[in-house]
Image (cartoon, rainbow, N blue to C red; front, side, top):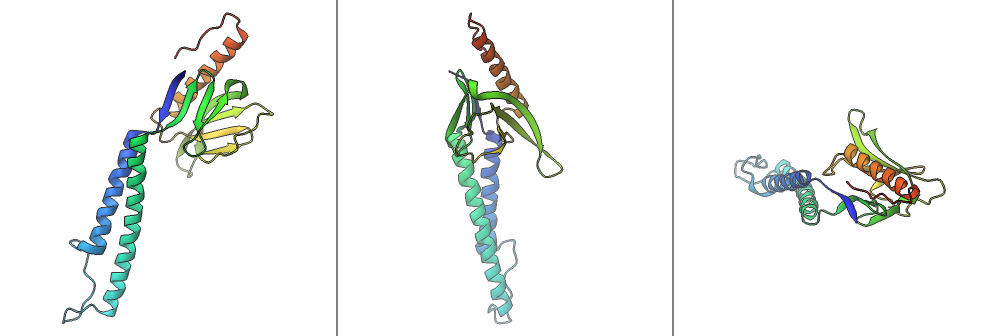
Length: 194
């Protein structure tokens, strides 16, 4: 049974769609409409000059870049809103994590040493919220880890866009891990309750 399921935040995905639409509108304005942007240079007869042709090519280049970026953001945002796949799950058997491109990797409780929160520096000014899952010595790391970082026996999951804070996720996963350890050592069999 799944006790906690974490997905990407809806507001961030919606913002991606909005920014993508703005980039597409900007691309159209730059390359085609020209209601706000300047027309290329022309001579007295209204014919585009050599400089104007260079300006036009530059406008098409920037329009193409804005269009590609806008389309990419819109596709990613709409796809994320439609599917909203799980990023992290706490189950009876262990943890399930999206660490290899949309495929959940299950790690049993017996293989886990600890689950903690880490605030990793990202660009010198901000801290990237991270959930750190440390595996026991001798446990093989998952083969394909593309959506996380690995340091030794620790999988570092970037929780920046999750719908629950990294601190809360780490606390709930650590509590579930501790309760699982009690159930394993307690023959009466206490059950995990969120």
